[in-house]
Length: 196
Image 1 (cartoon, one colour):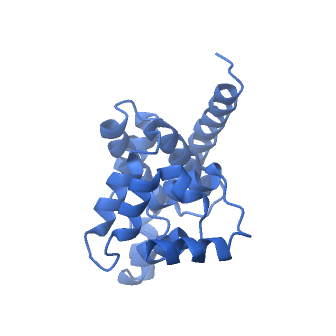
Image 2 (tube, rainbow, N blue to C red; image 1 turned 45 degrees about the vertical axis):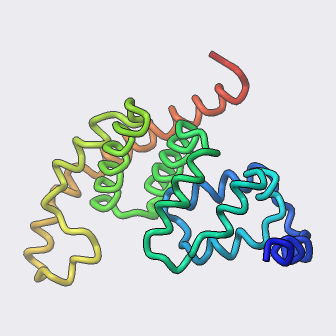
């Protein structure tokens, strides 16, 4: 089985997969941006993966039962052995802030996602990468507001009333997102250039 998988990977070796691409895919998987099925398919066409993980961990990975509903936890545990958690959290934070800054995530959902990120980072890296105001403050003010997928549950007048806080805080929220995104991007750039 392992031999046929290796042959299959060689057959599609035109996919140039560097360590950075492997790291990106691991980040996307840990951040739930790709499904188990997508990840499993990617595994079999990624020649760089075996050298990145080493033979034992690679065999562990391809041996998982991807149909098992708990396999995500096992894969997360394996991947975390090869991922710098602080770098992952920087990537994840920049990714979310960039989506919000580009208006790809509506404000109420964005505030809830930032709260989850903040609380998660309190555990994973102890010092969250966003301010408490952005991570908790805005969400607490917008907590009673519906997200877009819930709009249909309200009549037009009730919805308008429920969304008033969004209008009150939207400008400050987006300004704070932009400021903290710029700060993180500058820090990431400085870190990559060895600037202190």
